[in-house]
Length: 325
Ligand SMILES: Nc1ncnc2c1ncn2[C@@H]1O[C@H](COP(=O)(O)OP(=O)(O)O)[C@@H](O)[C@H]1O
Ligand SMILES: [Mg+2]
Image (cartoon, rainbow, N blue to C red; front, side, top):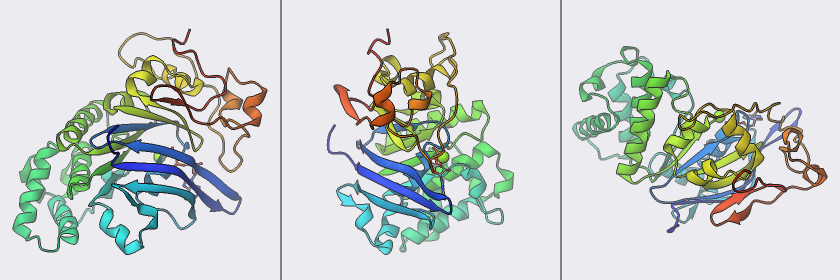
């Protein structure tokens, strides 16, 4: 990979609660290339949103970084003051939140909300310039620019989500994080927005981290895929390798649990049980209580993330055969 635009090293973050610490992001490392799309996938509760809000430093008060680096074009975001971070957020790295379509303020016109965001970051921008930019952004996300003077209640769910995407793109960030941006929408709208996001990301040559619990969605948008399990990274490889030769039993199970990735018939294998409570994660490999391949070592020692094949990383004591035979 050429010089990555974003480089995350040994990132560890936990939440403190009355019952104890929740180990939501445990020693996560990955790079994102310029113009690359990285999919982050895993069941609900695996720490995907926690990684996203760590990257933007938008953490709740009970969250604490225990270590690591987040380098954006060489600058460690964890070393910036809060004021400096304000300049990076939205300008250099921005995010579309889970269920974001409900985030528009109902009493303001949709366009005006984006204009306000633009003028906050570009103090010299006139209203006319901002309106022109909003029209451009609406066009980009597939909304008719005349809609900028309408109110959120006049938009469908899909249109509101497009407006939110326009807002996240407004300052032309180097990296955009999309956290389950289409999960609340019906499948047809979801699919259209996915295609549009991929098109925009390639056109703007922007780095994108796309988060979903649905591996078939991730398959559509990602160049590379990181599979998360219980706050840790289980597997990291090109989308092709993840689908054609998954090495981690969790990845294999996750794929088998979703019908027809590419339309072909495959036997649905249920993934029994659920991800662990991160207040008391299992010892060793956190997947071992659910893993059909687990042996004694799995409950005792944490498997390191190792490069088993070129650019194909897996954290498992007993990875699948490359041909899954
Ligand atoms: N503010 C919080 N305080 C305590 N625990 C939290 C908080 N936010 C999330 N968690 C816990 O952190 C873990 C990871 O959650 P999350 O990052 O939302 O996962 P995902 O996005 O993959 O569903 C879960 O166990 C969740 O309950
Ligand atoms: Mg989430």
